[in-house]
Length: 333
Image (cartoon, rainbow, N blue to C red; front, side, top):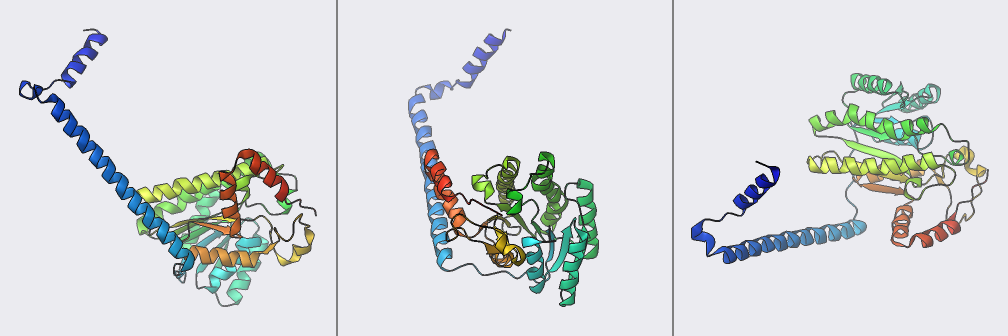
């Protein structure tokens, strides 16, 4: 039998209706179509109701913020603690009662940070790790678990551009991608399955607002930041589908690049200082922790940057280019 004959035979079987129903073909078809239409309208109404409830909930939470959860006793791994925001996150989380694993490739600065934390009566331990090396990540996460137990929270603070990185000679493309993107996958492989087994955890990715709008002369860096945004969306959807989102929340921090420590506050001249000033890293860390403790999905430092970027996306492309030209930071050192 030819393939054409088989198709014709299959179609005739599919459209076959018993003789006793043949005279009712049209009414039956109409009833089925009506049933399908009713189900579709019902589903649409359900979606509209839940969508409205979520919008009202969001508006309510803008007025009355969600309660902060406690981080006391949590085992927090922070990757990238030798300086900047990662360092201040470690200090402040330890003060809140968390057991902090300070992870960085710079062992000297990292050891000094841990001595400061332990000297203040809090709990921390230093771990040296190269995040561009998968085996090193596995070794480090195993060492953290041996020291403290299963990791319940982790912050990825590496690869976020600093002011100097925006004007300095960029590192090799592969190094940028390994540190800023690929290392996220290796950390998730090592930590997330155990969080799922324990049904408890929190994941925090730090990225630059360069991932929302790009940055000039730093294409690999901008692409890496955009990739972290996509990874966040994918992991968020995975946790939603597997019903873990309530017990294992995930947060994405959009960090303004000009977050500075006190010792380099006077190094930078901004084009519009009144609109785009600098932020101290300890202040940024405090706001990040506050958002994480409230289980916020997206956190922007400063807060208006995320809203501004979303508004830009609604405008015509040429209009956004003109606005970027106006607000170009014009960094000089």
